Image (cartoon, rainbow, N blue to C red):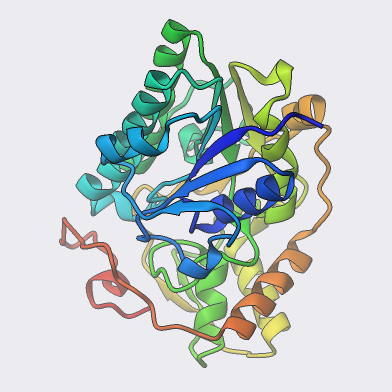
Amino acid sequence: MTKPLKILITGVAGFLGSHLAEKLSNMKHKVVGIDNMIGGYKDNVPKNIEFHEIDCCDLKAVKNVMKGVNVVYHCAATAHEGLSVFSPYEITKNNYLASISIFTAAVNEKVKRIIFCSSMARYGDQKTPFSENMKPKPVDPYAISKVAAEEVLANLCELNNIEWVIAVPHNIIGPRQKYDDPFRNVISIMINRMLQGKAPIIYGDGEQQRCFSYIDDCLSCMLPMLDQKNLNKQIINVGPDEEFVTINKVAEICTNLTGINLKPIFKKDRPREVKHALCSSDKARELLNYKTTTGLEEGIKKTYEYIKKRGTRPFDYNIELEIKNELTPDTWKNKEI
């Protein structure tokens, strides 16, 4: 086993960050977690880690908690691809500037490695499957902020001789995902609504295609990034590429699982939404021996069981719409979700 390391995880009250913190602390590493609590739940934070409620944009505070850290997992993000078209300032600040703050503090502390969670949004609307050697073509402010952060990470790390890895997870599902966010996490939104007797909402014709990754399969790639030697300066797609499904199919699976048969409500397309988004897992299979162990239906079932056990919640519109016009979805303007 690797000797114990001091690891900083951003977004530790969130979905991916909390799972990483739990796994790494159980491996006897010293885990320090930070979160501003915008997109997470307090009870997600593992009890056996050091937790600080601070914002990644607060460079002074970040520098204080970075002391003695060996490795950084930067998972924190306001991961709202569609919303970024209508709240570009807040989302760019929480993705780009927050990332620069984390990278700055990490470089200043001379950490050994930074693992940055980017997004499949980096690929834009290119031909599927997306592979890591494709040039990024972001189509919305969220994706632009992620690609810009990637470039600054590589720039600073190469100058200061610090290792970096860029993970590209896609559409992770499972327990601890925020399910009362009206702007993201389509499966959790559907389940939360359906358990309240409300029909699922679908934007456009529902023929958008996505691949979904169960949290454990994502973690199987994220954990070796801690110290596996051949991963330095690598960009790696994280998640399955076997089940490429439409949003209509997702709604059908949710209906079958919940037993709540409500006809979906179709709304107009959201601007800049990519129609087909599928990442190739070949590189992850080659470098990380990636294998999908939890299929889509089983992953949705576990997500449903988590939400049902925890209880439905009203949707929390905690990010202001900065641009309201005829393009803004009515479901967001009128808080209809």
